[in-house]
Image (cartoon, rainbow, N blue to C red; front, side, top):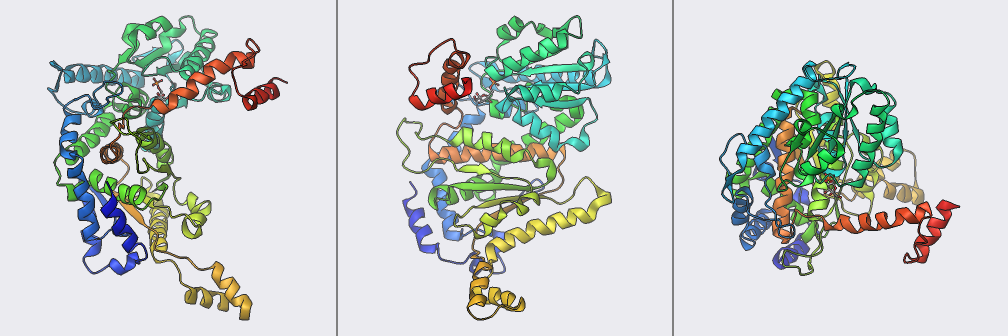
Length: 529
Ligand code: F6P
């Protein structure tokens, strides 16, 4: 699949990225879309490589597959489901899937959910001790990371009750959150697509007991977000407090619908609609822009060049925006749960690596922690910088400029490095001489020629956050199509769940667990001793 690209990569791997620059490269290797600006000129991609990468799209029938996804075809073949998270942010219908207009239900649920969110904010819907002061979203994975990341990202727009997120089954998580809250003015949202996830149901029971000690009708202060309305009613949550959605929304793609309720309560209906519009604008761009001008496609092709062609095993996502501090974690689920697979759609082993390991932290914090390895370690880590033109603190504009300067400095340092003569000069100025001068200088050399990209966005508004998330969702889709995998299932999380279920009675002492391996039994014995 990538033979020609690999040959090309081998041929140019010693080339200095900086040598590619003429007076046109910066502009020619950048893409703009609806206020977003993406620069990939600091990579080793040249015109010919880009053409070869673009040619991959035709080899995998990409345009047809994109059309099929938006049209609601059953792309998720192992679960026999359509993939229609884009419908959740669409402003209008119809969208006919298997003879039904799915938009009718989507728009009706959105209306009900946003009315509810605003009623919680205004106090029209309240707790047994008065207007809600706090909301606790209990969910995990896609039922947690999206709204948790977005609530933090959009804090300047949040005037509603405080939103808290409980995900871990570790009792410490819920204990630390609930201990500061008044149950009489707390709304609990149980967010679970399947309503079977053990962590979420366990935490929901803990919250119910906590609530029951303080109020007469505890489940009145519970809301459920789920596709499994029978299970939510078994839990005791009234039908009018259940916001349902369809199984064609994957958990990690679900922040746009009911799973986004906590975000809607935090920022209000109007801002939530702006968040959806940002994503819808990105959807339109993704569907209509020519491949070379298409932001998700270019982002994906850069990803393929680095991960599958050059074989770099990880990529760092480095937002220079403190409020995007959960964005790398969000992307980890989005990208790694989607494209971390070893078999293709056809069930055959992949011959090339699947999606890379995604990680990151906001700048400038990361600079003082792991950037050492990025600059001088022996692994090449393609870095994806993200940076806003404007912050939300005009009174601290000088700090924003310092932030921007740091971000630009990093990508420059990665590309240019520092050669031995420059390092010798620095070491000499510090008074080193002779053999010691050489030794000291060698520690100050930066190989450089390390690839990075920079995405600039205007300001982290609800609209912009919607664009950014949708951009990465579509990037994952494009990469998945090129890799030939199903980006929409997640069988890799199942085995651990099954084994945990079987180990619980062993830890309790109700079962000897003889079918476990000696190492695990030894660990159980240690824990029980
Ligand atoms: O275990 C993985 C997973 O299924 C994710 O895909 C999902 O986002 C998360 O668990 C939570 O699932 P649910 O929303 O059904 O509780």
